[in-house]
Image (cartoon, rainbow, N blue to C red; front, side, top):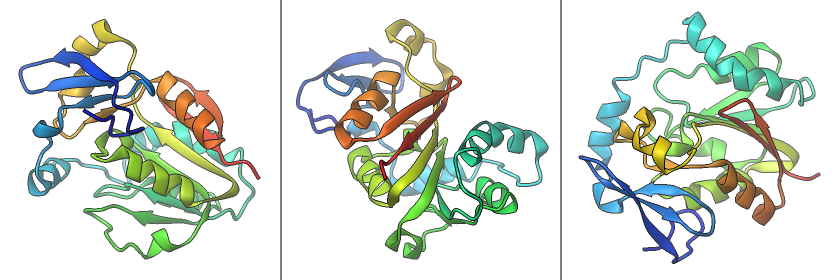
Length: 211
């Protein structure tokens, strides 16, 4: 079974629960759900429709600020961005725009117009979305290609800590969570793609494309 992120053939069984099996790539360290267990598109969207992401929710804004604040500190005022995987209630794009960093949106279900994917940006945000990627190799390549030289990619996702923690991890129980990254996974991607990598707290990852 090829790794869906780096296409390496050396993958092994990692964990099994009542719903599905999980595998791990021995090169990039990605843990991924059994492809046979991936939800069809309508069932996946039905899960997302249950999300209640309200731009007026102060708690949700505080959550997103853990990425927005350090990212804004690294940007010049007026820098233009894209929120990739904005979900049913785009909020981070509003926060960035309000702070002086105009931000477009894209989401395959809730903002499917692909016009924003035809240009490059000074920054891209992707919060609690990368773990949903069925084909992370394709999506990662797209994200990197949309960055201008010197641009930033800001991610939020919970990181794999090891087999024992994974077995008790609530994060894997969401049926739409299928690609699980570790610190080592991002280190592999940064080295392979020539990106500068920073970890901010437990689940915020910043990568910069060299100028």
